[in-house]
Amino acid sequence: MTFLYSDDPADPIRFTDIDGDELVIEPSPRHGRPAISLRTARADGEGGAAVHVLADETDELLAAIRRTAHHSTGGEPPHALAGVQFARRFVLQHPDHPDMHGIQFPSGTVVADTPYTGLTAAVSVEHLTGDDPNFTVRWADNTAGSPS
Image (cartoon, one colour):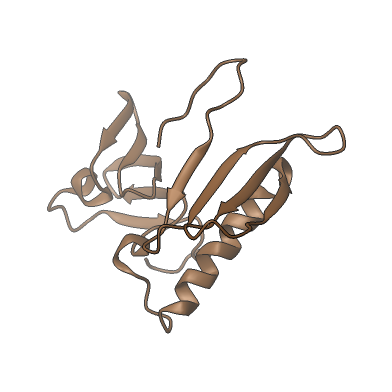
């Protein structure tokens, strides 16, 4: 998926399912507020439907879609939904070094603020810690003081 940053309207996003039905997502202001339109086009040519979601409600909708996908598999996430679903904050602690703060993205990639160096990117948190067993990873969503 490509994100376009301009003042021009974004191109519609089209998703075709295994039956040939299509979902079209595009900007569509509603009642003077920014919104998106979710339209369906059936492969058999029969009628479709449209739903309009206000822009400030899209995060809630995406979370509900992820929850529904998770439940549709009996609690086991499908391969594409496995792992981190949202960016997560962490702190790497080591007795001999200052704390390193960072973010892990859904892909697993991390960006961390390395003391005295600046921002560092890595393919995983483990890449930052290496084989050093003295590192402790504290995730922001863990209870304070609990090991990770």
